[in-house]
Length: 211
Image 1: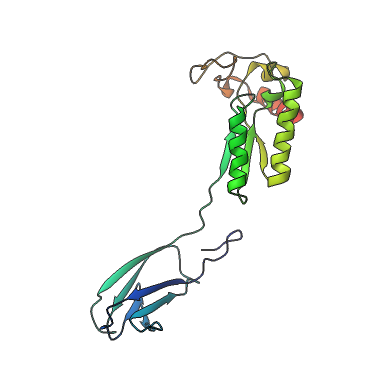
Image 2: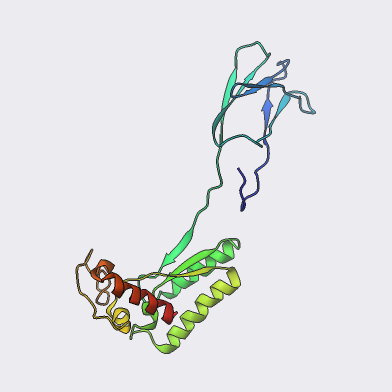
């Protein structure tokens, strides 16, 4: 089915091949009689065409018979769906990515030019002392390039890293945590619910200010 983003797929078409001895084929869509099917140019096959305009989503049954009053000799289930959209995103759990991770995202665009990525960037890119200013500038240029060259979206993804939380003027909490820290800087697995609503509003404002 079409919508504002995806055009209607068009009619359902099929060729039914026979051994040439079948005098005629009649078709039904669910309980609606479609009539006799036209033969192909070579004569041994029949052409089925079902207009999909107005056909609701769901499973539909196409049945065939040699005559309008004959029992069905074959059934085919046709499924009509609404468009399926796949959202591809990257959550920045750390302050930087490995070179191959940047490259893989670039390759996605090379192989699928129509694909849009959503980059949920961690604001700790700009507060982590392990990320140099030169590196931060490179990351920024890379992100903006992905947006400007490919139409990618840039969002925000927050872990409660102390370098970022403290840059908002809020004391960093060390608990409660939802998992072990996996060797990452302090605050990574601290629940954001450790902060009050006012504090977290300040944290979001800080993220917006940074990037």
